[in-house]
Length: 274
Image (cartoon, rainbow, N blue to C red):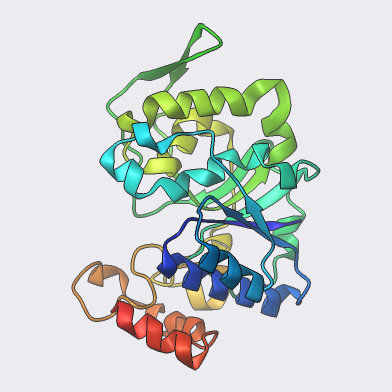
């Protein structure tokens, strides 16, 4: 199964991606299949991905961020994961493991790769409550209006690690319905791509064990995590008050593990982010 990452032209995300792929290969072997879905236009970025031996799929998203809210425009890259079922380079893949670039692979993934959720699998989100003001949301597809009842009350799920059943998403135009829903409702939701997935698929999302998407501030992270997700503070965010309440428990330890994957030159660059 391919592990898929998404990237635009933000340099900090390239550094995160390098560590993610290096740790993936350290855990799963040097030939672990992966793919970077790239929606940017920076030749230097492409050269860096080639030097890292990361396969690239150049992709123009169907969702046009020019019509998004200011936050949606600023975070346009996060919506790429919503379109994996349409990517030509994944056309022959039944399943794909999507991961945000700010992950660290820490233990083997074989058990995760045996799972086949009906639509998608995600672990719970513990820091972003599922909240909305709408009883329903609607959208138009092929001149017909559809109404989606909001799946409340449920826990929201974290899209930072998502096991997608691509074959199921391609059936009966489901991915097309979903993207039509996204285009009309991005301005009505509160947590970007994650809320769109939760709002549309709701209780059809299969819950994954927390070990597959475990932030370093969780008590059990060091003992149980297979995929560590630097949700909130990134590894270089150590000297300011932003999200200080999440730099607890195993954050420093996992940050040090993350830093060990960097070259000396990359360490200098990361220190400049602080």
